[in-house]
Every structure is written in structure tokens, then in C-alpha cells.
Amino acid sequence: MSQAPSQFSSSAPSHVLCPRRRTSTALAALAALGLALVLAGCGGGSDDAAGKPEEGSASAVAGYPVTVRNCGTEVTFDEPPQRVVTIKSTSTELLLALGLGERIVGQAFGDGPVPEQWAEEAAGIPTISDEAPSQEVVLEHEPDLVLAGWESNLAADTAGERDQLARLGVHTYVSPAACQAPQDQPDRMTFDLLFDQFQEVGRILGAPEPAAELVREQRSLLAEVSRARPGTTALWWSSGEDTPYVGGGIGAPQMVLDVLGLDNVVGDVDQTWTSLGWEAIVDADPDVIVLVDATWNSARDKIDQLESSPATAELSAVRRQRYLVVPFPAAEAGVRSVPAAIDLSGQLGELGLLEPTQR
View 1: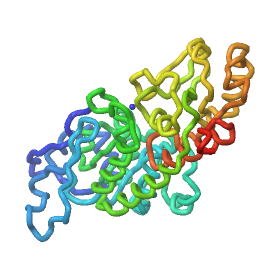
View 2: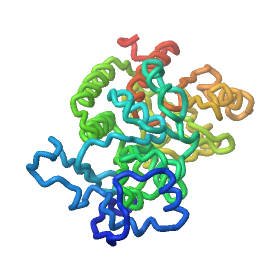
View 3: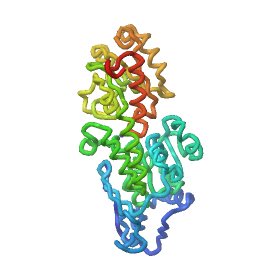
View 4: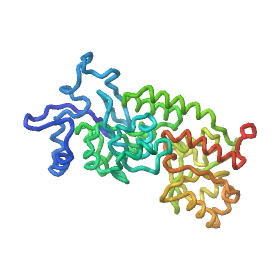
């Protein structure tokens, strides 16, 4: 939170029925009988020569095929996916931002309510699981794409491994910011890389213009972010009580802290997230603490813990009540990252921590 390549080609036995989409009853029976490997010959993946339009033919879709290498897996799309299962809020909200909410046949593992601007549209999207969904649950909705926020969402004990889903005719895509293999994850997450992801998903879904417009809008908003006074240090605390889980030096928290001009006290850790003991936090003594507000571990709970412990109560940020709060769905790289940076910049201003020329 890399798998084998997701494309396969072979010939199916003549007695095996290989429909493009299968009913949920058939899929359940398939799982029960353990015949998934037999369907490798059905050519459901995007490299199926029998079902792939010839180049230049009338049935070919303009702008396709689109091939991307995603978290170490190459995926080829011969046409825009029309039935999408989204896992994690970042995936759902990206499609909503692109104006493609009607293509979502099921959402899962949401981190909280969507922003008000998409609330009405999101209300009509069925939630298929409050946690990482099983493969059976995903396949019941007959998707042609599973858009996942974490690599762990596409595993044997969740929605299914990527190569197996490809054999069943289901494409997969993981937020590049969440790639786990060192050779696949960004050296350091940046807004440029995030915007590249928006445009890549736009190409995959046949919506390059809405994606380009989204990037233009977010770049314009990003230019409005005011920066902290030079030398202001920060800790980004996501979860964990005995041992805090904090933003490291290469992930989404670092991306936001960079644009705010805040120095991450664990910025030298080459991980997206890391565990950090309280003793190390006390030694670092950050000027501000960014608190991720989640229903299961709220910002208020975190503040109570900081102020009730004799050791952390003496931290500069705690004594001066220098807390910044970000909602959990905005704490990972996605369409909320820019609005989160703007909001955090405003909170810095309320604390009197912006550069004098930007107050």
C-alpha cells in the first residue's frame, strides 16, 4: 500500500462459455468451483486478439488503445471503461471531479463524506463495502475497471490480484502515489506528479479535456497558497496512539507541507508514511502539528492525548495550541490535496505563522 503484468492471450476450449460480462450468479459459481484459471483462455483482457478491433477499422475507438504502466503493471485499454468500481475516497472523488460519476457502479472503503459540491451525485452511487471489498463483491457489479487508492486494495484477500482480474476481463489502476515497490513509487510526491495522474486517468476514461480543465483549475488555486514563515517546522500525525503514524518525506503529506513552506521534522525519512516514537517527537519539538481528523481517531482525541501526557504537553506546538486540522479523505494524494493546502494555509494565517508579506 508489484504485481505481474496484467495482460494475457490464449485460446479457450470450445466448450467454455466466455461472455464479456457474467451474471453475479455465474461469478459466484465460478469462484466456488475454482475455475478462474480456465477463463484465462477467454481473452477477457485487453490483449485479446479475437475481440480487439483491427487498427484503422470502423469499430476502433478514436484515441485508443491507451497503454499505461501503473505500479509495475502494464495495462492496455481498447476503449473507455464504462463500469467502474472505485475503492477509497480518492478514486471516487477523482471520477466525480471529472464529471464521470455516472460510470461508478459501486464505491467501497470510503474515508468520509465527499465535498458538498458532489454530495448530490455521490448519493446515488451504491456503496458495496465499508471496507476493502472482496473479489466476489466487486465482480457482482460487473466492472470493466477497478480504480483503487491503495495497492493493498488489489490483493488475494481483497478485490483480487491484478493478473487474476485481467483474466476475468477487468482492468485495474492504482493511484501512482500509492505504489509500494521502490522502483515504482515516486522519489518524492509533487503536485506535478498528481496532476499527471489526473490526466492519465482522463486519457484512460476518454475524458482528456475534463482532466486538462481540472488540472488548470487546480494549478490556479495552488498559486494562491500562502507560505509559512521560513524555518517553521511541522509534524503530520495521521493515526496511532502508542506509536504515532506520521507523514514521511516522499508522500502526500510532504507534498502539501512543501507547498506550505513547512519543514517536515521527519522529512529525511524516505517513506510515504512511517512510525515515530513519542520520544523522537519530543526531541524534534515541531512548531505546528498537523492532525488528521478521522471518525475513528479524531483531531479532538489527538489534542486530548497531547495535552494530557506530561511529556507532550510541553511541546511548543501544544503549549501554544498550534494545531492544523485536515480531514482524513484529504490526507492522501487526490483532488482534495490543493483545497487542503489552501485551507491549511488559512489556518497558518490564523496562528500568525505566515510570511509577513503574505498575511
